[in-house]
Image (tube, rainbow, N blue to C red):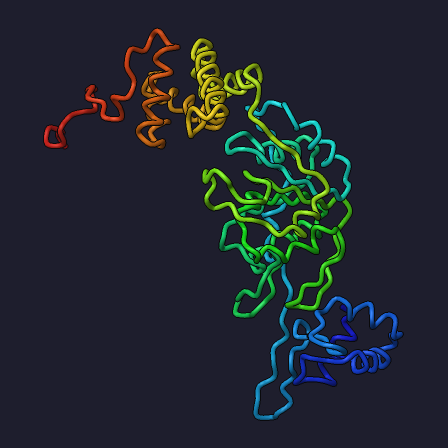
Length: 380
């Protein structure tokens, strides 16, 4: 909102937050604004009832009494821009599936809100990050939870060096920088994230707490990831997923459906992780991918209730690099599932890997080494 108009309103109506258009137009005339210009500013505020607008977002009452100390000006500060950066390219990343489309969207510099949905662990967030890295675009990642509110996203008042300042949140920082705003796990949010509705239109946003209007810089865009399509989880696998408002979802231009990679692609991903952890085993790579693919097909047919994600295969590779045993790596990484599911997964792997006779005797390893010496036997 016009700064001079705000100051005039605060001066004329120090103890009021509900004003009529006539009052605001009169204040606007005092600072050289036309009625049309005032009405344009006024439409940014909620209408309480006929002819009355709620101006609480900009009305800070002046204390005129001599007995009362003057109110300190409230500053506006971004404090730190560490949240905005160009991500580094990751050597383990493999371009596949929807990557080329996401890259084109990011490279275009257009405002084109994109909703990316898919099961957990299939690389949705990683894909957006690496598309930004390849395009050399700054991005801001915001992790959504049921507790996320407007203060977390848009910003709020903070105490800095003994003074109260308004610290801009990651959303405003992304807008001002013309960066990519990645809203991760957007379907974990409540109705408190409805404050993003205006942001998803790509238009200037009024910061209600300060009266400042933030205009998105060219290149600003919003991409969101979710395990659902914003309609909740029918099978109960994502219990924290909420039902998002239809008007909110409608502001996303397109929805991208991300599946798990094809076996040939997944082998490349696993091979790169084996290189990263310096534990290359091509046979183990083939077996892992085939095992995971079989489980996924069984899941689709309703034979099992869980799935092995690409992320979990990468966890197995990392664990294999530590312990050096295929069976132990798999056993430790499927321990998170319930007993029936775990045993089914382990049993299936023993059928495809001839080098493994039985899996599941871990993590209690009774082998000894030179380090397994009782503390009392050490000489100091």
